[in-house]
Image (cartoon, rainbow, N blue to C red; front, side):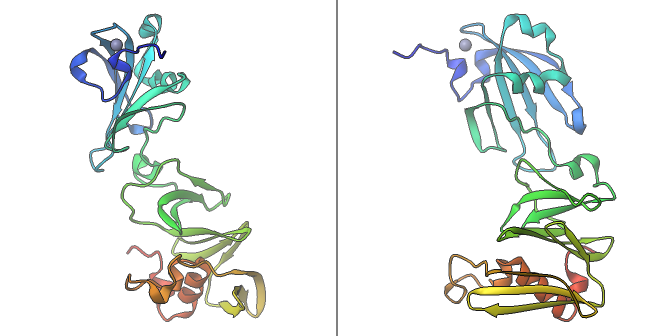
Length: 269
Ligand SMILES: [Zn+2]
């Protein structure tokens, strides 16, 4: 027989079942997380409660609550609340961000928006990119280290990307603009696109052979089958869906060869 647990452990959580003591605001990373201790009126269990919401973003509200011991209560301060929650074997979480009135989780706690929103802007050497096949998945590309820091949570509002990234075969391609110049990052090889840069794309059977050259010298060449929509394009009822929407190499090639597109790509001005 399952041991009977108090209602305070079973979402949905009713605030009227608790007495709430506000501890303070956690301003780590510029967030305003409200930290409180709630006592269950039925079983007197102590819950560490964390709530954060980003006003300019709809569906950004989220809360976490974790059961803590009576002895731990005096140790809780706003800035260690997240660490406490993370250290617990399990917690409850919910809110509009998760589109949930509450469920059980463990470990991962997602309370930050993205770095660029927190800091107002990215560092000089950082740009915001998205995964080509899932534009809600965002990453921060450091143009000095060429490392992509994929963000743990999906983006809420997708605007202002400076690049797209897609893994094609064994290679990850990232096509991005930095300091007003387009670049291609092919795995670890960085190619800055200038007037002399040429793109070549040809079909060999089901494969595409893609290469970039400068002044007649081939800088890289890659061969892999075309990444396609699950729905064949000719049967796709969605207007304007094109091959370049699925295979980043085709997009790069079109941008580099079609009149005027080099200037417009990832240009938010
Ligand atoms: Zn209870």
